[in-house]
Length: 409
Image (tube, rainbow, N blue to C red; front, top):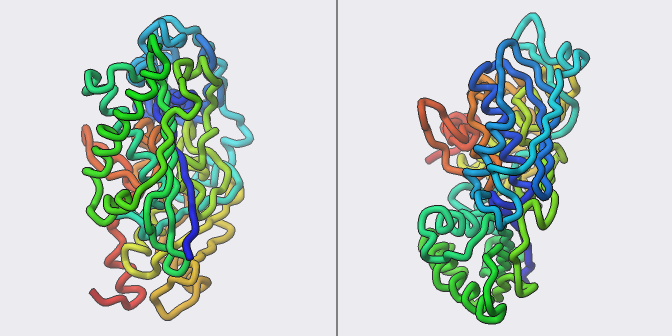
């Protein structure tokens, strides 16, 4: 027996992702000037207009909001008047005000190590063996397909000269019901915004052919051979199923920060705490707690503790230590202890106070804008300009965990 599971992704030109990237670009600019900045920034995009709101507390940072917004939109590719949304001419309204003193008093403490959580809530971290980066395969492929499409649009426009910034992808994977391992790619959906064509039928045929011959071919070529082979059993492909996708971006739909939290996390696998990431500094455990739990889950799977791990932590606002830690290995544990004991060990081995998470991952650095498109997890960590990006994806606790759980090799 087999079963199907589906995940989706959206491109950097999707209106919700435009909003996320603006919010994180503003956050990064505050942190660049003042690493102690406290930021909770929300963005709303619609035809010809961007509205930025939220709460900020900073000693000396001054951020030109209009400049950051226009720079972000231009980088994404909204640079033509015919798109109906242009970086150089759209209206921008900023209603950012100072962070609430009631929130601030719970976060900032005399002892910096006892910094309280910036909000209550629960956060989840997840990892599995579907891919080399320990991510669910449907989401991984959905992200990767759109990254390839974006690379073509930005760097090889002559290949698909009609591409516009907005796009969505979706992969359905067939899994073995006993082993829960991928069997084949079942269905692919890609909707990509494009220029107007003289003939709609000719346009549709060309785009579908280019998607098969260029985008999917590059996707397969970028994969390990075992994963690439999952395409060989035949799959259903839907390209621009409505037949036309000219009107897109904030003109086709409004965009709002935090509306793609499933795309940002695990594509519906595992669980999601409900809190958005983008636009929030790391005192907000919605973000830092989610990064910490992903790091622990990934290192547990990489160490061989289990084949699949879901970790939940929960916090109370103003309280440094989590109020609970929960682990679910879905019956895939390879060590001689139950999930409750694994959770107890996690609480002892990893310091999950917000200040400790911030220090370990360098979360006062301006490293967040790249997270705002194509997922916060499953990304390759890298160093640029002396800053470590995606540090929660490092596997530097594997040896420690092997020793703790008595795993050889």
